[in-house]
Structure formats: C-alpha cells, structure tokens
Length: 100
Image (cartoon, rainbow, N blue to C red; front, side, top):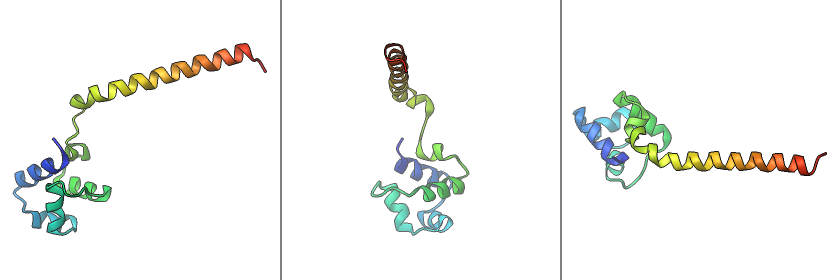
C-alpha cells in the first residue's frame, strides 16, 4: 500500500477529518488533501508528526512491510556481499603479487 492510500485509511479509521488532522500536525487541510491524492509528498518532519499523531511507527505510516519487501532487498544484499568478497580477493592478490 502506498503512502497516500495509507494516510487516508488511517485518518478515516481514527474518525478524523482532513481539517482536524491538519490542525493537529500544523499544516493546511489542502496539504492533507494533496498528500492523500498523491499530488505531493510530505517532508520528513511532517511524516514524523503524522506518525506521532496516529501513534504509529513511520514504517506503518509509509506502508512498509518487511515481509513483503524482503525479496526486494535480497538482491541488493547479494550484490553487496559479492562486491566485498571480490574486493577482499583483489586486495589479497595485490598484496601477494606486489608486496611492499
């Protein structure tokens, strides 16, 4: 679920209007509308205020689910690991072939 959809769902589940939420986090109602319609994205400080207002984590607000996103990062982890292994082998080879 993306941020805009998640924001609207959470706001409505707490029975808050856009205006009430806007007053709580000190932005305009129009700003909340833009976030919910994915017309703009909030700055980090606003994300923090929203999470605090909803009494949830930033990850929950953003719709981050580590179980769903695990596959997305496994490739990156593999590439990172492979890079460091190759780097270590190259350094070892240089030391053996070109001692100081």
